[in-house]
Amino acid sequence: MVMDLLRLLASVVIAVMAGRLIAKLNLPPILGWLIAGMILGPYALNLLSDSVLEATWLEAAESLLECVFGLMIGTEMIWKEMKKAGLSILVTTVTESLGTFVVVSLVFGVIFAVTGVPLYLAFMFGGIALATAPAPSLSVVNTLKTDGPVTRTLIPMAALDDLVGALVFFLVIAFVSAHILTAGVPVTVVLFLVFLPVLIGIVTGFVTGKLLQHTKRPGTTLAVMVLMLLVSAGIGFAINSMLSTPVLNFMLIGMSFSTVFANMVTEEQLAGMMKVMNPVIGFAMVVVILKLAAPLDYHLIFGAGIYTAVYIVARAIGKYSGAYFGAAVTHAPRTVKKYLGFTLLPHSGVSLVFTGIAVSVLQGPAPECAQIIQGTIAAAAVINEIIAVFVAKKGFEWAGELYQAKGGAPA
Image (tube, rainbow, N blue to C red; front, side, top):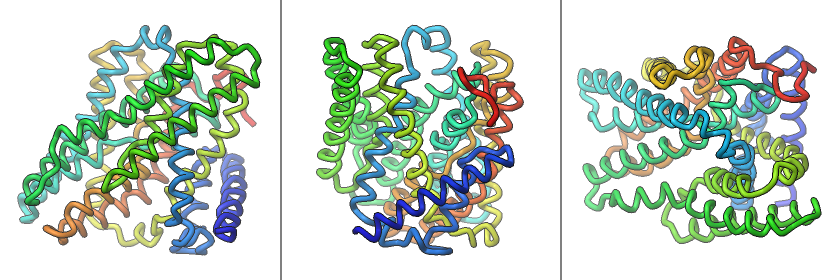
């Protein structure tokens, strides 16, 4: 374990250096983290070997760091600010998510009808495609100090999109399971597991908010928040250990936890806590992105087939058109309508998790379908993520939001 921990720490240092090098080219540092992850992973230098990536302690650490990462989203979801654009954000989240699901499912439905592949696989592709990986776009927000209508729409959308994505995907899995397995997954169980992380966060966040209302010193405030964050994650670990497949979304726990207490404390308390936590969130980003990128086989870029190309293009069309439509019908600012879709293309972290679940469902009854979905999404994850981070950065640039946050200036 000690050697594995040293390997991870060395990889984090290398990734940070790669990010700084990429930043000098006026590109988001996350691109350097992604490339470093692939180079350091099992398919290249093997510094982040399978023994590191599959270690139980790293899985636990990643879940905890996802909980920490949720603070970045939740602490921005201040109710009095969100009320101004609440309906627009909700409608746009639904239209871009469901728009992507419909476009990808329809395109693959036509292809599979012609090629003789079972049609239910098209809906599984659609269910995987609608999810957005928030870490890449939010890291662009964090490192390039973006602010403006697109940024303020994206941050709360990141959490809502995760919720909608998980709900639709697990409903698809439930229906496909019922179709191909003798023992399907009850829809009520699916709904419960999707919303359970939010409920955990709401309860612990409310308790935290009440405690923080009685703390005066910054050190005590921070200690209470961190302790309750660990309690929230601990509850998640306990529940996950009872499930046959651990599926709880820890980022949603952290997001809902911090959303609740952030709306119960003073602005000064919140600013003091986040001043200390921002470097921790930055570290969490690097580790999560490394863990996401390391298992990606860069050789798949050269072996990607027509399904991969169709998937990437159909998903991009669904995301952009869905976001454009939602922003248009809710009369969102012009920049949101034109450029929000570009920031929603990052995908790989969530897509790989969903793919793993889909493959586990298909492996026994339909191994050929499992192979199609695994090969297509793995190749798409590598190719799409490199393109998507660059496009997200351009989206913020075209919207005029780079370095607009307080204290934001080009390095």
